Image (cartoon, rainbow, N blue to C red; front, side, top):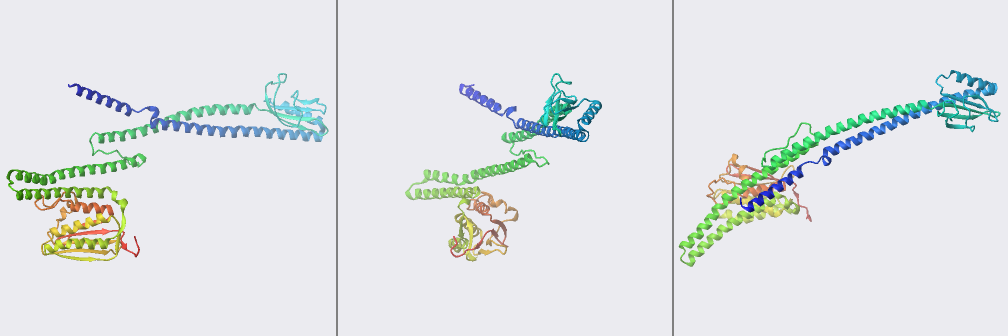
Length: 481
């Protein structure tokens, strides 16, 4: 293998390796990973929010229930003080303590000088109001946390009623444990759900990428898979398939145009070469050289006409001329085109009959529309019967817009060939023995599609009738642009 080929092969291998490395997905940058992470984060946030609301509602309700019990008990003891004095309240306190099997009730009845009269609290804040107390080391059940309400009694003294908050703390511990279990389950479910969703997205993207890779490899007819679900991937696949259909159609048209160009240009180029070679071999004087040169110029003009027609068709099909659309008088354009082709019709003894309604205007490219009408009349003159009739009619349509008709009384076009003659270089004369390029009706079709004009080829009995349904026409008002 030559050195240059070895270097080129090495560069190609390195380039292929780089592309494969670039195409290899990184899991942390993939859509599946991002979907999984997002699903997991949203699940955890939702779980934390629900756990917080449950915590606040449950513990708050338990504390409110405990406070209501303290208020109710304190109210009963205050009533006992009012009815029977401190002695009666002390007896009620002792009875409550004796009946408290769980040991969650706490009381203190103090005299005006602070001396304890009854209760199981050795000491407590004597100021009225709510307090949260923690029993000291000398107290029974040291370390217990209480919710207590202090109340000033008539004639002096203080009544303190408390409840152990241990049940509320147990409820909080249970909620914390439940939140942990629920959070763990939500974490697993969120991770599993995210992985399933991400896997589905990855599989769909991989299937679309594989289909596009097959198209890139040359299987231009292959299409992306589309399911019946109709989700975003299916809608995207349909749009891509439509674009691929369009690309395939354009490639086929380009291939056909290339073949047609090669076929149609070969004849005039061969004729030009033969003419010049013949002149080199046989031309003996200035007259013969001049005749050969004039023939070569005619062949060159034919080639230039073909390329000019192809350029106009390409401009019309690209839609680039649509940006320059302007309002113009279609009636005037039709009349001008008829006047230009009248001498050619007279040379063949044909009658050019026109019926053009005045004042009809349209929005479009006047140069392209002029060329379109010129091509139609030129075909009518060339293919019409010598001494026959050619018609050009332009009239408003009943439903709006207008109708333009060009017809002749020649041989016409068979019904089965009317679609094919609108393609580039297609001619009924397969041998190309008659003059023409096969681009006239192709340009008519391209200009009609650019302007949204309906084009129909019909039978004039005899001859060909071309009907153009032109939308958006309106009588041109005075002073209109």
